[in-house]
Length: 478
Ligand code: GDP
Image (tube, rainbow, N blue to C red; front, side, top):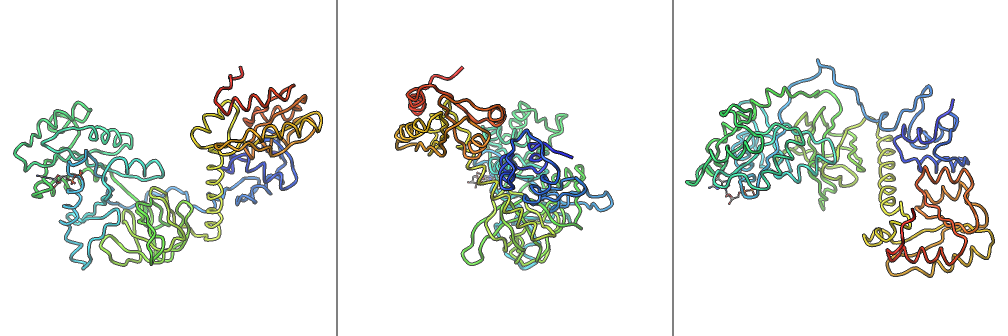
């Protein structure tokens, strides 16, 4: 039984160079399109935290996370997760504050409202979870990073101002996220309020109010007087009912990091919004490259809690580093594997950063230099005689300037071979050959692996090409 190297990499969900490097460490020099036997593949897989069972590769992620679908009978009703969007100054913050302060449960429990990035309010015995950071940009930034699932977007439009540029952006962001839109026509207390005009304008963006035969609920409100806020919350609950939102509270928690910061006394602090399962004190958590145990959990009322079920936002202390807002988090059963996965993720991050200025060719060299991404141009020199290698090394390295350092990382006599290409691949180098040719292996590998090999007969031509490329004056090769 055999497997192609690139196939192994994709099954392991790692970069192919990662697999090639591990193979090199095991003493096997192979390219990404070559086959290796299963025993070798297993060794590589294990090096990367995966496990091979009956010739099936199980990745570290699959071993760590419970990915089974929840059976219907385990699902319970959950509260809606709501985000507030709209143009600046139309009243997003005022509405969020009004709703929070109207919540009686916070004072009943003896807590004091805390701004942790999200809060839950109780309306007629049902909960609604609000994301406390208004605005579509924060929302989309978070959504693009992870699995932040919001169910409903409240689009705030000031009745005296109508639809403005950020209202339109918000509409498009909400549509892209496939969330249900409810419109809050705010500032109804103002004498200049004109809700009919707002509704008219909404139709121009495909949002047709219910009373005009469409499916968009419009709630006239005033964040100043509080008028209409209760009715709006009722509409949120009604909409949530129709969405039939469910979660399974009886499994390990997973969800999204809403906010994070480093507290001087308590260390890394993260606000987590549980989206499925229940998070408990003492659980092992992984969020991006942060790992740790839940030490202390506090809710949005500042009270210590021991568990947080679906849609409950909590502040958690205990992670070893500060995760990024928008990261997915998960509670896991195996701490050792979680630490291994974090190591793998950190490594991948570094590789990613490295790659930023890695795939360099003489043709894109100048652009990369301009963007400040390229600090060093690594070159591999192969030539027919030793004298040429040394001459070229010196001439090329002399081209270094303030912006970029030219460095010959490897120079030798002989044809360009597979190990040259692998080195180039791993270090982002360009290969320059004098009076030599790549052998067949190297040619195939370089084509597949996007490594640039430039061949010359005259040393001066090579130096001139690099010099011109550094000035952005190289005529592209056709
Ligand atoms: P945001 O930028 O959308 O978060 O808007 P804010 O909540 O900060 O509100 C912007 C301004 O509008 C503030 O001065 C609020 O006091 C005012 N404002 C918000 N809602 C109302 C309202 O319903 N009526 C009136 N008259 N003013 C409001």
